[in-house]
Image 1: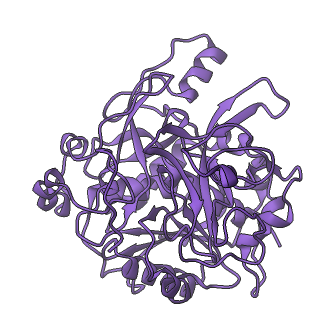
Image 2: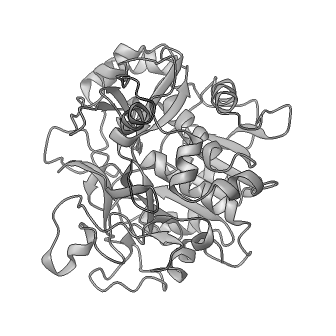
Length: 444
């Protein structure tokens, strides 16, 4: 399911097949025994960036089994990140180089950076109480709660534990005891997602729903379970190639009025993925985020590393265009709707310990941007029961509630629909209507 012959040796999210190296370590991964060295050996080669930052796709970006979808995250393995460069310029201290394994302290953006960049500091301090953000991922992270506690404690965020009623981890049937097999690659993804939801909405409760595998049917069942358990905000950081089955998946798993469902647009550059292509979800693209001397204090461009790596975008082959999308270069669903930071070179800090050296890592990929936007929706308040929150940003298009990202591209597309791969004023595929500036564009 969802396979497509790749046009390069790069491990693409649209090419869902286990390579021989990944198969050789599948047993170790399943047992939670894969080391950081194994993880690095089974992922794509590190990519250089203009800043000297290098990174590799996390192990879950290469599916373990046929028919599974891939996560959309990348882990920094070296170089000076944008966070470190800004810190060094501010303090006059030497910039720290991100180590290949765990760092003693963060080398990526933390909650205060993200809240400042997106105008959310005030809302994060007072909003989100009583709201629940669900994180849907595959396989189990046995250390999820403990790692989340490390992240939140370091940054002074409120405690979020099972005992305190803030955190809950369940399998796709809702059981707290019958959990899927542990997987060190997906554990990295889960740590990223949990930390980003916490960074944006520290007052929110968090529900982690772990699917028993990364197939669409199991992940979709986990989405339904998240909604059944009361989550009105559901983040999904995975995807695969489109197929003719997608419209049936839409009705089976993603048609939940009154629920803001965010999905990462993908990390393989121009080209549509599912479930980001679902008309019922908010498709979230990715940017490179850096400090600047502007009034905002930050600047963003389209995240793009190469022809096979960068934020996803495009025109769906199967999903109908929702009524609130009016762009004319794509007869069906256009991707993305909005965006947030995803470039690993301007990546975010994450604490993780399962299957890797315990400590701080810096991550990128649209797996970071999807839970960030889910957190913004949660800060904006509970959607009305009959609404489709994916349309909310469209009502505020072109206003100060969104930062219009106007430069960069993620590949090549037809001249008549160049906006689907190239940023410009107003709507474009790689960044949608832009990034949040407060919560105003995420409420009905």
